[in-house]
Length: 379
Image (cartoon, rainbow, N blue to C red):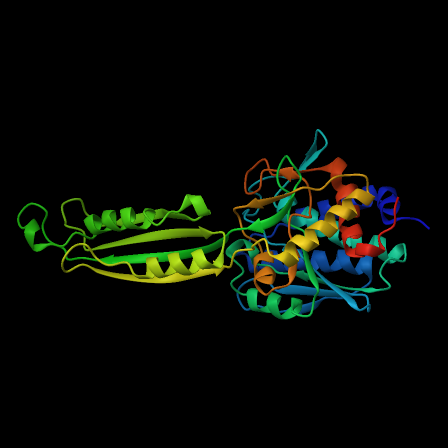
């Protein structure tokens, strides 16, 4: 019987063509019309390759989310793959050069999404799906922190025994992502009192001076020994050079490796107290993604993936990384989750974003073999 890998090798040109089709359908997260058009292109590819139609979760302002259900077997696997990107329309071109395909979202993560479609198709064509049901969950707002899709993702994946995330592999090493930091965003608003900076500064309360103290406090919450990072990335205050500033705003990014740190630091940020008498502080925001921790279930799934890689004659290593994905949500639910199973390449969120064309069929076959699990066949 033909293996999934052999089938994919025979169809390498079509897989690359489908990736180009999806990349050409540009989809900036905040452009609903463009994202929905990309979703229509995605639906066309899935209909052509898998013969199923999408269940559409319509959204009023962001792009619609898409769910594709394939197979009727008892083993339920969710595959996650978003189709929005960080790139504005025509901000970077798509081009093929030196064995690489460059383009907006080609690595993060349209290449991996098409690979997932073809991994499923290869199993359908080679008789590997008899015991499996696949839920291909495609949200449209991952690059925004999944504000409209988180609850939907959690609902749609709740019955799954495992979640495979087709985000790109670790750059240069091609490792899977076995842990991810959780992330939070906060806004700290500081209120002071305006006064003339020359005539009567003593009557003012400087929000900018208070802001400086709060930045020191917030950066003091960093705990690199446990992977916690707090960064004030935005600091704005005042509006005239000769006026004691009466307002300031801080934008704060938080990254943590475990839920205990998330609880500790979130509480500390919310507990910001003014240093200057008469100043006032308000904090909004919070954790947007829980951390994807190295749970026993996640590590067991990773070991299964390593065995799948061995059947293909390759080794698969794992690495903990800083950025988050929608897999953070399913991992926090207690569902075995493995990330970084998509395309190889580098340049995520950079203008040289690209995938390595020669790796496409092997990475697609790897995903197929992981889906097969213990049913995988030696090749």
